[in-house]
Length: 177
Image 1 (tube, one colour):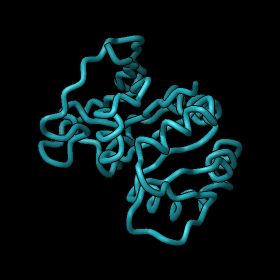
Image 2 (cartoon, rainbow, N blue to C red; image 1 turned 90 degrees about the vertical axis):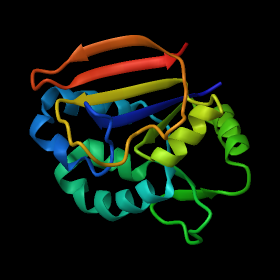
Image 3 (cartoon, rainbow, N blue to C red; image 1 turned 30 degrees about the vertical axis):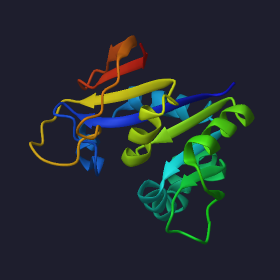
Image 4 (cartoon, helix red, strand yellow; image 1 turned 180 degrees about the vertical axis):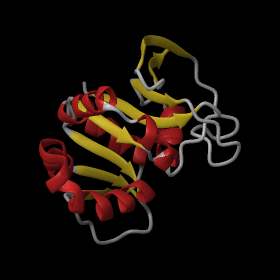
């Protein structure tokens, strides 16, 4: 049975949208960690908004990101969407029941990565489908913005691993308790 791991950027106050604020803290340690997250993934599971942003940005960045960019672009993508109809960028759109489709994916792939995709992540968490939450907590407080977790989301987690980069980013790995 495959494993779903979510890789998320958040501020100290829980904001995750548009992580341009992460730039000053993104160093070689995080680059290496993200490289491993991507290289061990067999498929990306994305929400519509994240998919649209990634498909616009990543093909243009492949030359500067080397092996990471090649893998990121070549990897199959499964996208939860009810509005898009023309898949691009190695994507297949999930039709019908998302939870059932994700359960089937867990039977087909060993490592499934969710990047960003807040609505999808919240849905998957409530369905008990996420096996590991890999959260980079950046030493920034924004005071406003979309939080990673929807109001009312309750999940009991257990800290499986933690470390801190030289730039002050806490890298926290949680598993369902």
